[in-house]
Image (cartoon, rainbow, N blue to C red; front, side):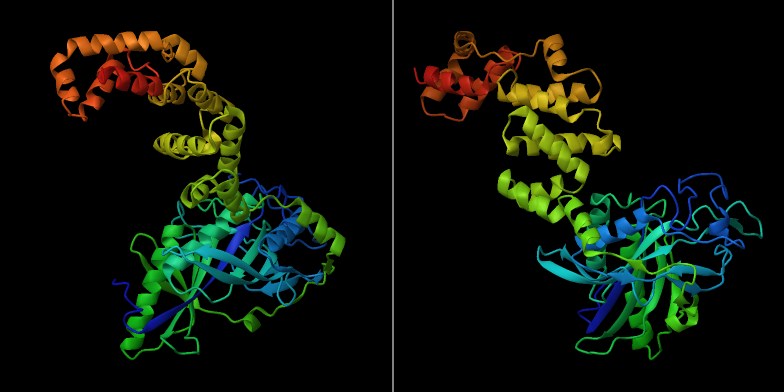
Length: 485
């Protein structure tokens, strides 16, 4: 479908609800484990199942992580918040209600700055982020005419992060999601694994005529678990709604599902409003009180956040905005880079080039991320140190790097085993230059008659004669002097 709604006089209004699974070892209201991939229904205890006589107890790590997110998103932390029961009936919700937060969420009025396609910055408001328990999972594969229920995920702690309806395109939605994903992973409160459902999104989409103030009727596309699918689902839904309205039809408030195979959304059920859930305060859970001292202690424990780290890399390491953005894309990559800079003694820009281009390129081919790098940061620093101290040239370093990636040993071991030490003895370089000049009298005469481009020819011939080991700086200086006679 053509994605030209702006030119056609329409505006999209998009708000995202992101379910972020917290990295706690146990569930939000019980001591049951949260390990992913366990056999079905082996991690559902009495509290998860809502058995008679059991009482929920709030996981303090979940509370700390929720406050951590609020502080990192410049939000307000509620000094007092309460849990509520959200009632609905679904096979994978064993109690018949979900413990969530409604009127008094833990986090409110945050914000997140995103970078748009044209390089400009836009701030998206965060309405709220509330704590809640996850539901279980309905299984449809391998069941003929039946549905399996796995309650392992039920009770897993979540924060649901609700944006203001300030997003105006699918690309803006993806930019917001990626920035949010980076933040929660940086904070260490979520692993961000979208395939496992740790970070998933509901997209609320409506359209209105450009310049109109009133919002159109919205639809909610549920549980989209990849950036690409979110973009496709929103694009489809915008175009679908416009086609309905331009044909004289009406948009119905409903919940929809995205089919990645067709790239289309389809209606699932009519959309509920808050009163349909019959919220009321959970009588089994006391209000949560966050003191100023508690909040300040968490604030002091915050790591350096992505935007601050990116600005520091530009300022302190002299990196371009592009390099700084690449190297701060994950906390682990940024730490790896700074370890290389500290240990190698090489220029920060040279380290950035090697890490962002050579190392990340090789890891991409291997299908690995920085945490799985076959070259540790200290070993990589040793390679760059050998360039800095002129043991090897940059060209030879490429050969050493390839050997290190394939597990042939350390930089020093490879250099020694392959005899790759750079020739820095100027008398040896001069000797090689003189031999090349003697073998190429025609080219020598042409160079001295004004054909300066032949300088590269002589450089190549000397490098060939020295097996690429001649120090490039010394070679260029000595060759220029010799060629000039």
